[in-house]
Length: 143
Ligand code: HEC
Image 1: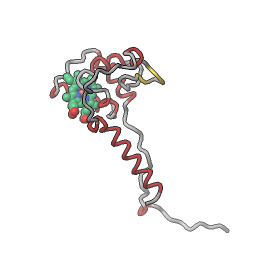
Image 2 (image 1 turned 90 degrees about the vertical axis):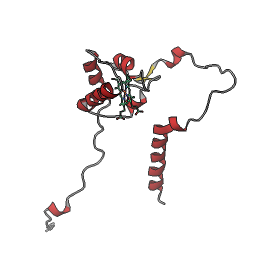
Image 3 (image 1 turned 120 degrees about the horizontal axis):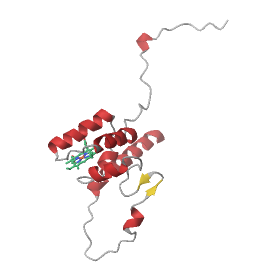
Image 4 (image 1 turned 180 degrees about the vertical axis):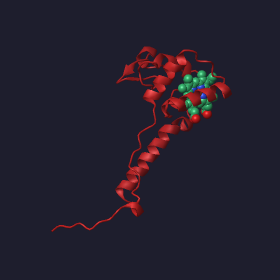
């Protein structure tokens, strides 16, 4: 196996692991009391524009998203998803119809701005394949 294939495999593995690490975490509560080394305040801070506790980008709309979107599930579900404004609006309305998400009122547009700005679809990573049949070939004349 070539090195580059191995790199691809290893990175695919780590991405999968990162996405599903919650499922692998089988640790249960230890039978002895544990002390929390970091205080709640430590943890609840912003570093490099990221709110550490939720992993969300800290920008306008963060407070509304945190208050409304991290109640039922972790912010990971948001971070792992990307969509344009329409796509986010559809996910929100799905949660409202099926999962008991409340009416977001005037916060909805702030939340949609935030989501569609920071969790927009990624650019396509590579160009489309060449359509060989449609290329007009010519002979290069070097004279
Ligand atoms: C009342 C509970 C509730 C609230 C509040 C809530 N959600 Fe959800 N959401 C759910 C449930 C339940 C699921 C499905 C979870 C699963 O499949 O494990 C879900 C799934 C999702 C998903 C994954 C959708 C997919 O297709 O995989 C995203 C993204 C999401 N929510 C974003 C949000 C955002 C953004 C907000 C704030 C506007 C929000 N949620 C607020 C209940 C909620």
